[in-house]
Length: 152
Image (cartoon, rainbow, N blue to C red; front, side, top):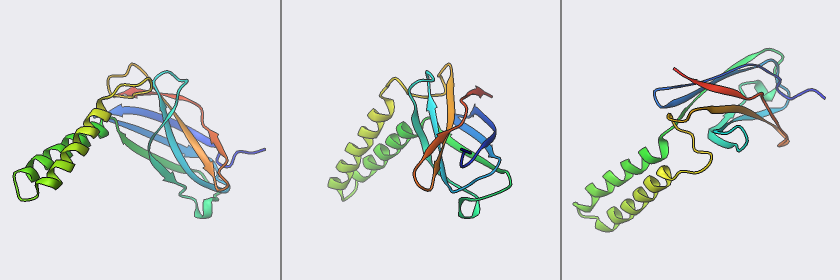
């Protein structure tokens, strides 16, 4: 059985705290979207970034299509710090209750973003493995080959 979106070239690299992923489909049939998955050990995988919709009309194409995606490697902690700083400003203004809620959310995001687990990916990781998950319109998924992101 043929894959819904057979893959051509796949490349991944890290530059300026961003994971850059580029890939090509040779054709597409009933393709819905792609998901980028990352791993620090090549065994445990997690989704990185948001879904990338098929560029093919109706998910079908007889020609190759090029895709690219940029994913921040430090997004959660940065978002938490931003919310925390915003909440500090609100606390010194009229709405102290809202500022307090923002501070709690901001600190939670900072702590979550700084929490280390087995599959954390950062610019300091020795190796970052990347694969593309292709999801068909009926929910069936297939995976690309695994590539190692290079640091530029």
